[in-house]
Amino acid sequence: MSEAVRLTSLAHGGGCGCKLAPAVLREIMAKMPAAAAFPNLLVGTETSDDAAVWRLNDSQALVATTDFFMPVVDDPFDFGRIAATNALSDVYAMGGRPILALAIVGMPVDKLSPDTIGAILAGGASVCAAAGVPVAGGHSIDSVEPIYGLVALGLVHPDRVLTNRGGRGGDVLILTKPLGVGVLSAAFKQERLDTAGYASLIGVTTQLNVLGADLAEIPGVHGVTDVTGFGLLGHALEMAQGGRVVAEIAAASTPALPGVESLLRAGVKTGASGRNWASYGDQVQDLAEISLWRRELLTDPQTSGGLLIAAAADSADAVLAAARARGFSQAAVVGRLVALPLGQKPRVRLI
Image (cartoon, rainbow, N blue to C red; front, side, top):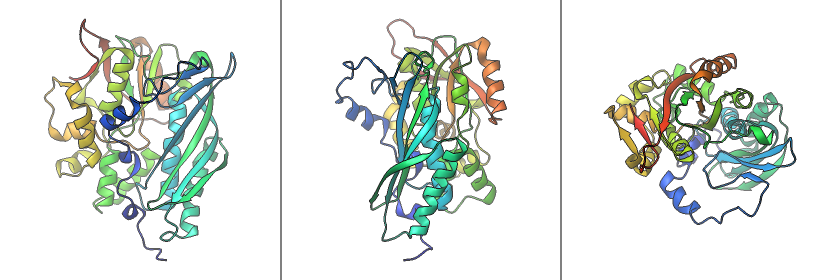
């Protein structure tokens, strides 16, 4: 068994770029039965939210999610860290605090050594330990491609659950992490990413979205989602649809990771960005007439991306202060929500 094998060479995709395209997912989920018969199910499949939420009692609700994907980097420990950070993000995005994790492991055991697989699990466990969460078990299979992720469970007060449908007209939109993870990961796979770019990629994808639990305590925070495989535009559209509003994105002021613009202009991108645009581009109104590279940035799949927060305008400073106190130094206002004109459908508008 060769130890020189690149993890990314064993996977046809990587990170959240592996997700089914939004249009395909909508078609599949349209056939799911409604869960209205379960009154304690506060959040289910109906609104494309980040996790399910089940009321336990008057002061506690259980947040439950699962997330896994194929390698976005070759270092096994880093892959485990990224996957675990991404999985826990869904709990934080609901305003919850994680309490428990289970590992999901699928590995080509004929190609990867036990030491390599163990390093992946160790990377995930290190992130969970930093979040105060035990990895209390899991399930493993022999698979053609390497897959790793978590089932993550958390707790939140039933009255403080944050969803992607709570935004309302007049809210500002705040993004906590810069965009471009998919571009950097594509450059890495093509061996076109320098040392600084790799450090940037690892830094942003292993930063826990712990801010989400804080947001549940800030008055005026109405809605939250994390930006992952569908890109900023796709997740902003879900927020617009959930709140029955228009999401306006200030395209030119949306932050990007260092070097991403140059890579996009050089043609480095993921296949998922094109699939994303094909799935929802007809619901995006481009008043800004943005360039192709910027559109590809806004549709770029984010592995372990930041939080997109809808908050009342007079709460924006408090949200930004809380974000920066948690280490999200590039958190920025990237747009706003506006009331839906009579007779029109929710959409995203680039301004």
